[in-house]
Length: 263
Ligand SMILES: [Fe+2]
Image (cartoon, rainbow, N blue to C red):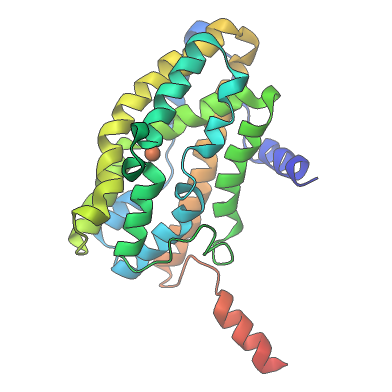
């Protein structure tokens, strides 16, 4: 029931991009990313955020980054040939290439502890708004259903294609706020890794999948559009709250205390 509800909400929120022939999928992905004009949380963090706002940013992202790469991994057995090899290549990097201390989820754990946050999985589940959960749940939805494998591939490509520059800004922001190498490693690592992943995801995974299964071309672009749209809604929420001088998280503890007081 929850998956059906999420899938129909996505269908309403995200217009399907125009269909293109399989050999135009890569170019269409580039166009979708280029047309995305959402506000930039990365620029705000780099230029003006205080440490409390950076902590909030990390709190939002912890919902996904502490299990980073897992939702896309579900698609591996649902692919074959070149696209499968491409996805495995990306995921191997995400999981540290055999070195646990280099797993991206572990690097993120170090970032969290360096800025005084709880690195337990789901520790902040009650503090994040629905849009933050929607970002994570959409990846899980696409990963868990064979029929959505095209959307999953496009979703991953959109993430990788929009990752390198923001991660450079996150690292700069955290250094400006006093973060050391240990704290910024997660972001530094993504500047390099995702410039490579972008090529693999757009070309070998998405264009390769569209060539294998032309009927999936539309889904690939739709998955990318879902990733971009949700990120835009999230950025609008966070920046609106920050510009109002308030928190982008839910006032969970305050509300609970108020309710107790009223009782
Ligand atoms: Fe990563």
